[in-house]
Length: 417
Image (cartoon, rainbow, N blue to C red; front, side, top):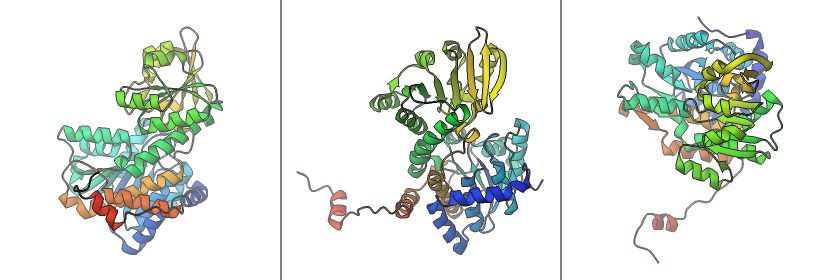
């Protein structure tokens, strides 16, 4: 199939939203201007498994401006903005993504994108890499490398490498400072809270909000919940992160205790069953449960379902589970990414840096693939610094430079007290 989207007639609306997002993406805009002139990706086939949003559309246009032949599919069944998919198709970019698609369709769409025989893969969660490594290894001969956007995907890819099974090099875009320090913290922090509020119309002030996982995403979410007047609780397995949460002013508890007092729970761990059966048993009537980790396995929906006497949809993204004692627990967006299912995902100003990393990493991969082994690499530091510099220039901020004397001092050992 050439594409599979909901409705091509939504394209004009998607074009306007893409244009609006582009105003807040000056770094990607500058890269696109260079790509138009230099065509560094000329003839390169790229398959991208990403959230099909207005921000992604601007990445797509940048890659195509650089000469790439691009095909896209969704990295989550609920994250596609159907008008954006229509806009991209109308722009000549094959897209296989429909908001609300079932699991079978989701994987058929990934398969369709992969079947374009890419030279470079772009993942958000590593589903493309997983399919190529398990079902379509014949395509590896065409692939020079790939990029990974999110924490969960990097975890999967490093596990694949540690088992000696990774078949081509990957750049972990997620690990660049201009990605995880900004996208994860400020993007996920704001958009997750936005999704919860849009889905529930809940007043956050005065509520006990439990953040499960205190990585960059958890830090951002807990900080914003606290800023809106919530009583913030953090659950962690890492002692350093738990200590950091304490120092940041949050209450730190074991999930066994936090599950008894929370009004709103958000999982951002990258693991499985962060909320499990015994936690549901502890929860008070009316508890709200959401997830912003990449996959919906962070909440053990299967165990909750087994405990449930009745279930109904009470709002567009809210399902009410009534368990045996009559207690009601509300699960948002089927346990999938709340910020993309019930809201619009990250604001374009932070995705500007994330997708600048993607565009420049594609160029880097093409230039350096012959020197790269089959392992997971960080984005080169000079690329990270270049993106930060362009972003500062775009928002009108100047910073100091070291003098020659200061440079000499920092690179010597002779001078002391």
